[in-house]
Image 1 (spheres, rainbow, N blue to C red):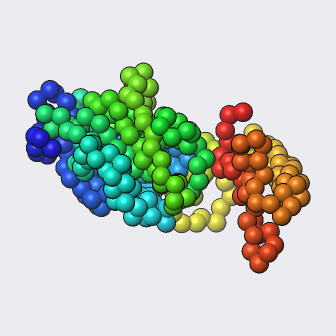
Image 2 (tube, helix red, strand yellow):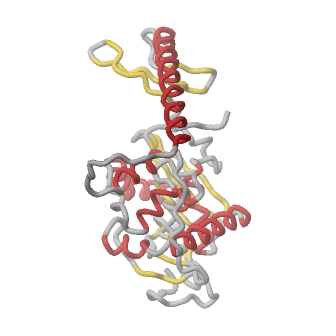
Image 3 (cartoon, rainbow, N blue to C red):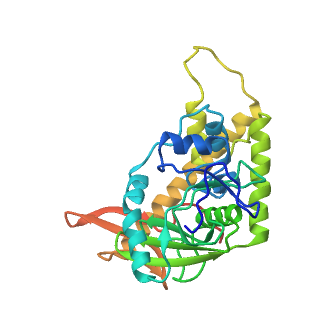
Length: 308
């Protein structure tokens, strides 16, 4: 960078403040994010993350449930990061990229930015453009290369970082299925950034004042609730009769939907025959996997509910 900004020092234009330089996933990295909201967390705050819910994030920030453990997907995403960054640099030799410290917004200490790389620092040491690096098992949610059509939770992350750093553009380099490299560009949107900022402020207020988020249908919420009790008391607990009715209605609907889903999967496999994929035009619906010559699994293209 042209100008070195030390931890805790504010930039000349009253911009973001450097928190420090930490190895992603390290105890220091987690500690720096513990009292704020990072880019990978803001999507959960607004209910758009497939991995974390507002409820589970709130309890994690409170220290009531354990931190997220590194999965194989997370491990390999981190392992591939240097090679994806190198590919971006190879394709853009005129755009030097470099690692960057962890930043926070001057006016909102809880708004934290930890982008993967920055492109071309400005004279005050702040990034002019950002680079986020991703891996994906398939291209579900990723649109045409060169557009801003990326999964919405990654868009939230990009806008969060741009808002903190006062940058205008975030490039996203993704490696799909281990062999297909693509690039996307997300431009700063003041209205979207303000929406995220407001939601973050509300979340931090609720965190400070012990306002617990409502229980929702996210898997992460259920897993968080499973972690909360410690011990077992051999007692009966009286519940609201309306909750009993809702639970039984949900069970009946689930079993009915499960039967319908099984029938649909059977018809899909029958229609595919010895093929690999079920498609409608260019849209992939499901993929048939084979082991020892026979069908092993039918993998749906959709992994969560989407708007029709």
